[in-house]
Image 1: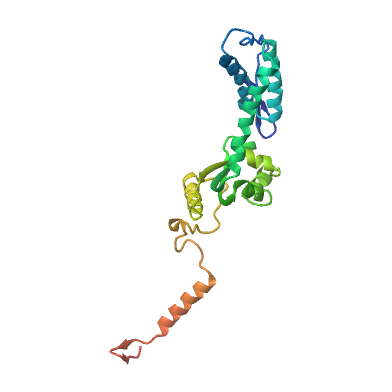
Image 2 (image 1 turned 120 degrees about the horizontal axis):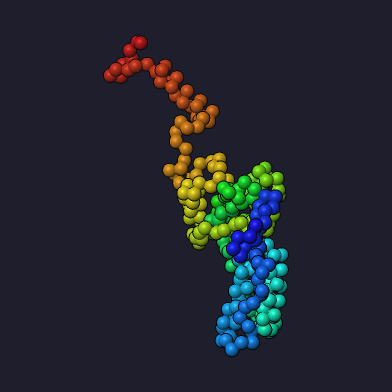
Length: 245
């Protein structure tokens, strides 16, 4: 389905996007042999390449669109000597941000699922790690809530590509004591669906379970029963003298 200059394709559990070009598009743009300034020519090349990166949902579509755009530019007087350096410059700057992010440590991160029904109401998981983020993402491949969610709700296995594409960094703190506190605050504020708290949050005393909300351990109950029975059997004293009941 075309929408403006984006072509949306529905798949089994998600949507994919690509650059949409009208059949009546003649393929004209600024001529590379014109008397315009070089910065205008570089801007024309960059517009085609950046549109491929922002509009295409997969790298396969990106490469196809860049190939098509290169041919359009060459048809309008541009040479490969002008196109290739600009393409390489933009492509080199694209993945570096993701690499720098997953190499950081002492971070609070979020993993968002947008598959199937989660496309409309995304399910997210918030976590923290004191090691590098990419190491923590690898741990999610073997176990954890995101893996269980994908397997139970969507019937698919979690992959490293899924984690890298859907993980984002919330906060960074070099102090090793603060990430657990930040994680607890983000969980309380955002209330992500995939975060199910099985134990008390020791970082935030206000988040601990109130007395009487859960069943007390057997040892605690036995101690309280023994204490209560002892109080009942203890004789009443008055001025150091025992009195009969």
